Length: 105
Image (tube, rainbow, N blue to C red; front, side, top):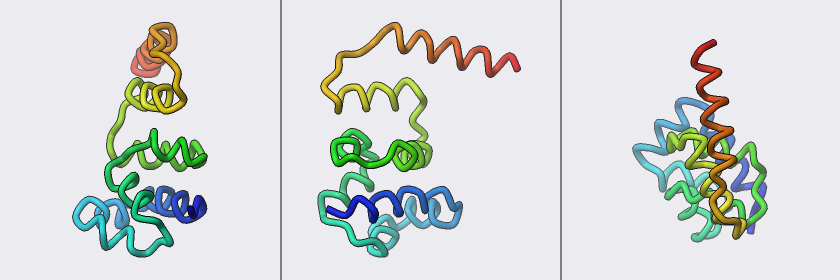
């Protein structure tokens, strides 16, 4: 496993040109990094749960989640599931309130 390679690939997706290449030709983008097939597949599929289990940094997971346009509820739900935690209605309600406050300005 190359956690550094996974994190580098995910963080590099914050660059618009890299994100565009990833969306159009994911294999070409991912070939730049020293990744196993499973790691490459997890990134290509946006499987932040699998990457979480590989101890990938939250910032890298967040960068990948942005490319896949996961909202906060989906992101947190995927992480909780990967960690073996049940859904948390309380946590989802906090996220919803926080989002509503941000929208109000």
